[in-house]
Amino acid sequence: MSPVVLPHTIHGSGPHRVIALHGWFGDRTSYAPLLDHVDGDRFTYATVDYRGYGEARNLEGHHTTAEIATDVLAVADHLSWETFSLIGHSMGGKAAQHILALAPQRVRALMGISPVPASGTGFDEDQWAFFSSAVDDPAVRRAIISRTTGDRLPTAWLDAMTRYSLTCSTTAAFSGYLRDWAGTDFHPQVKDSPVPTLIVAGAHDPELSAEVMRDTLLTWFPNSTLHVLQEAGHYAMDETPLALLAAVDDFLTAVDSPTRN
Image (cartoon, rainbow, N blue to C red):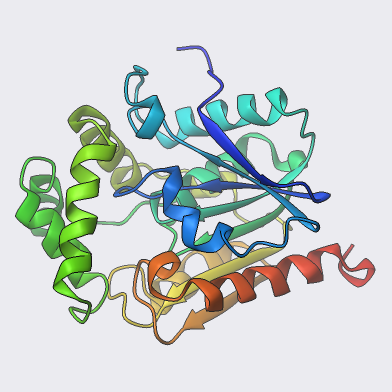
């Protein structure tokens, strides 16, 4: 399928342009807790919905990170953004790596929030059975959200996250993206990229932990930094939005500094 300009929202008007990519359970509104506090004089953020999600629910697609990448590049072209930084949560982090693979010259900086590695997850048979059952079982979705945040967050929040995941994406998209982010491996295409990279891990996330990041992205990207949020699990945008935004702002300030260019 040909690339499409995905539904998107612009926040701020600053010179440093950032494209934000959401995770498996959310849509572009997932970044709202951060964007409420973004310095709009320094940054312009564009948040997007993938095919099958949010306002793009009715867009047909193959539901792969490669497709996300080509569609996001179409958004950047539509906005006349020749270069930009990328921030991606969970499977959005893998999509960000795919954009880097396709257009390395356009990416100023890469930021992953509990990102799925470009190599996939390496699920064993039992893990795959569990995660794939979330496609049709809300209870499994809730269990995944709870597990990846350390089984420590309020019931009402877990219920709300589960309900929203059921309404913000189609079953076909939810299932298709799972197969892709869990199973595909394109990490040789990004390995040794010099792009400045920030990896944020939540201390309460047992799946995409700091250890996983050290074994994957931190070994692939020589100009990378790991930041561990001690009070967060997998959903740092909800759990610790201001601490996350502070880490992102500090990183992008360093990217903009002449000493880093």
